[in-house]
Image (cartoon, rainbow, N blue to C red; front, side, top):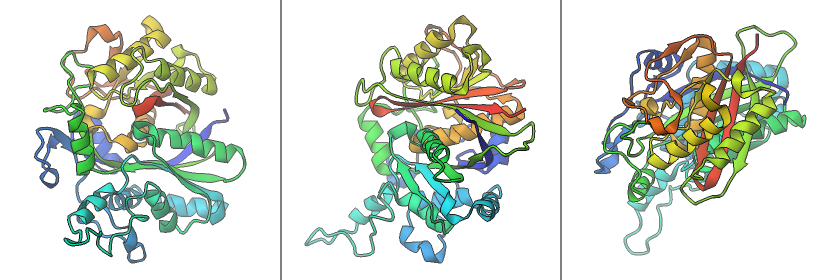
Length: 398
């Protein structure tokens, strides 16, 4: 594939608002997970919540979009000079030539939870001030961002569980290569809600302590929330050597099971191989892998087997950053794309926070300490329920 330029990017998670606190937390191997106190959930688990979401006030003309997910999105848009970067790109390409491609899993379903608490006691009707289309609807966050920047180009939402905001890179790439747009805002936003917390608890997938990806004692996930945005453009004629490019995209759908990965990681391996092929890279040219690494026994085993099968004994260093951020579900692909770009720019392969004893049966070179060295090509994995898989390759331009 023709590489694409990540001209600007930002992320907000439990590690902090923006790139500076995110990078500092990774360098210090600091987790943002805390004992769950979300909305009276009463669950014995840990979560990664973003500070200040409840206090964020949406712009007056966008008040119909008010929900936790869109407030979190606005926090992300207003940091790291992302608004200014979009404005500069718009001056070059125009409002009709910029698209919006965002991933989310549960979108603003939390607003529906709140609305149900205020149903009419006689009829059961939801309150009149509840706006499903601009809150709960998965397209809500994409429409919010499109209206936030007053764009006139295409906009879409991808909701494929935990691969959502990785797959948006593929959607934007196709639009750019088809000549339908000249720039794209890609990313993902997912926010904490009781539906997610109680749903994963009912599946027996929540850990009662901070999650430990690839650990021998791993026993479940810790749920987080995040907003991450990337401005994606065609590669210009002149480019700084330290610029970061999207070099490869791989997608697969093994449809093995509704909520469990293929036990040998077949779909994961196909996605990784396709990403390498589209980037024109051999496995030995990958310097670091940001694993999907949810810390469930089945997921980590399947991913470990897939990595071992594709990369062999010379597999590169790898880690999952979910021990630091929690599993941000539909935002995970975009958040970890930003972390992967930081790995390329900063020469930092982050350690897997909370993991103490790497499971030897998984056969991977899992980092328990930060590795500071140049990373020219980084592979980032995002695998979702139903066997929907996506792998991305990011690389240094120079």
